[in-house]
Image 1 (cartoon, rainbow, N blue to C red):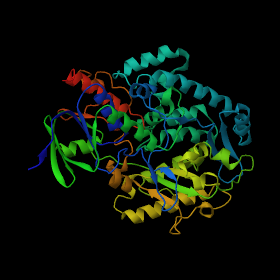
Image 2 (cartoon, one colour; image 1 turned 60 degrees about the vertical axis):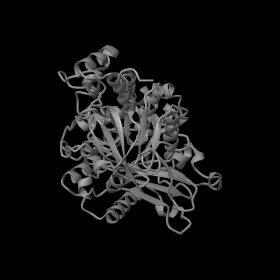
Image 3 (cartoon, rainbow, N blue to C red; image 1 turned 135 degrees about the horizontal axis):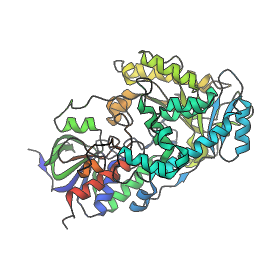
Image 4 (cartoon, rainbow, N blue to C red; image 1 turned 45 degrees about the vertical axis):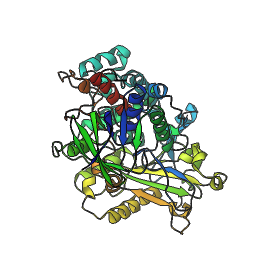
Length: 529
């Protein structure tokens, strides 16, 4: 017989950052809460790890930047999470040339000259106007992310009132992002820089697929500014603060606790310490995916299995590589987002090849160098050297293309393709800059969708748990119940979605956890003290 724990108000499945956010809110309000995390540590995808044997460097192993975490959540929970704003927005080498586009947020004149140097001078003012408009969009939309859902018509009215002349709704919601970019810009490189924000973790299955416009919206509204910041200490520092807030408030957090089933409206069953346990509860919040919550509740197959579309490669370097472009330093180029083979034409070609069932010949990628902004992620023996960490995020690799491969084979194949793509825009091979671990192996770690599914339980390796949805509901959709109003409905009695599967839940934001907690407050009523 399973050992029965004392009843709690809320059982939370998964100790990722969203589950911890929900736990902190509920416990602070006086509800009894237990969090069950199957790994031996909390954080889910928001973790830091020493990925290479004998090398003291804490890499943000999965997620890597912070934009969508609202200041409201930080204040409500008393979180101390220092973030570093990067001066350089991006650098994009133009393939086959020795020039590139540098977006220097601290020097508009230099940015303008960079546009001119790649033959895109006419696009500079269009760029400025475009991102001035997304700034208004961000200030209007982001403030609504921690409020009850609105319908499409109300969102349209909000945006029209915010800036009547900008046509924000018509441009950024009602128009496919590819069409908007084509009608706004002329240069292929400039178009690609904009379009990459529509493809991180997503993939268009057909022309005009709204998922790309939805993804773009989330990328440009974060924090009310669209800026993506580096968390001091790595992504693990974000989860550590949320864990502290939850435990300080009285939540119970169990690691190495794997949930085996949910009995809706009654209890959660899990294994811990080699024994089976049951915890009676009034409500369940699932930080795991909708797909996983349904499986645990015995209704597997109600929704199709999602898939992811990316490859992540972490590297530790002895030094940054040399560039073909002598007009920028390596520190400037890698100081923001370094785009690789991401022109509009290259993105389109890779999408078409993947849609046809083949891995793209050239993988579009982008690079983030956390250690240029935050040396604290390096140990004392590395901080005073030229050592740097790189995170490479490759696009347009649907899980279906590797799903039947052995995991090791898929990992090596995609790692080789990522490094090949990177080397195509450098003046020297990245391999010549790699540090070796204490066993003499190059410091390269690759995570495919197969790895994400196995390690984190992400269905098909989808980093958003399922296809992204607009942060509003369609006109006429019911907003009658608390779960519907807060976008956390699972389709299962007494089970709320509190992770990335929640509407507005993607990214490292805590929004899914916050909104699940708000719905729980309404459902449960005042806590029994």
